Image (cartoon, rainbow, N blue to C red; front, side, top):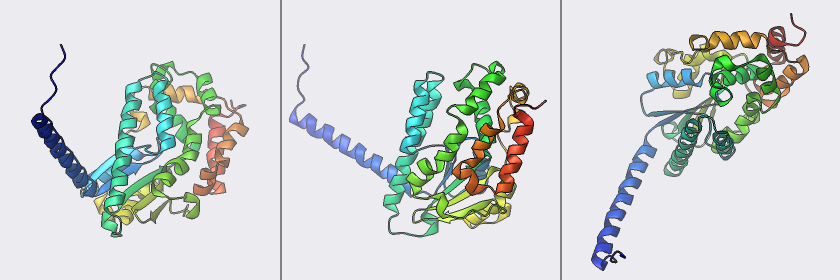
Amino acid sequence: MTAPLPSPEEIRVQRKVQSKATRQMLTDFRRIARQPLSLSYSMPRTGSKTVTATVTNGWRAGNVIHLHTMAACGMARIQKLAEAGRREHVWHKQLELGLSTRALVEAKKVISRGSLASSEKIFVIAGVRDPIATHFSAMYEWFWHYVDEVSDYRPEFLASSFTGESWYRWADAWFDEELSEVFGIDYRDHPFPRERGFLVVETEGARVLIIRTESLGKLPQALAELYRMREGDFPVIRTNVTSDRAGGEHFASCLERVRISRESLASAYELPFAEHFYTATEREAFLEKWVGKIGQGRG
């Protein structure tokens, strides 16, 4: 039996309710968008969880969001990972977080347009790390994308992962795909003080801190400059330390038996982002460390 059509009065009441709900939703969204916002926004495995915990503890003026991607290329990459079939719900949460945060960022840009007060800008902390360390740390962190348990890893598989769609190549693309698209920052336009280990860049809508993982000992100093607060406001809260987690010993032992050619390892330090953020001497030291650890011909 076909349901009766609503009367004109019922339609009017329904539209009134929907209109009120829409106005309330927009009001709530504007309120959230006007609140101060900090983003711990980095390529994975660059110390971003330590940054997030430290900022959350020391900067209490607004919301702190931790994420790795919210730009179109990153969203497409996460969608591809979700379709691979391993714990797709985790990747879907990453997609939801990225899409909602991007909407919030764009809303703040519109709402604050014309206001250049630093207090109304989005604060962003982006990390960068030794590319080979980034790759293998990501393989450990997201083991479930490849195997059921960390103990299922074998040296041959870890070696092959380095020459395929490696995480360190995403690290090289991240600044162009993410930071440039969302905030209009081309890292190549900003000489990086390598000895200092961090840099604050200010744009029309954001204050952005770029810091090397190897320089996290200077995190209080860097955050104090970013937020214009005191170093003492930011005691470092270290989280997600690999050696403290399940499977760490097996992964370390497995990695010790990986064998990769010096040429393949060296290619990671020829990437543009590695050359920008690290001196030739630093890159050579990284390379020698990894050649001594997993280079072919060792032992």
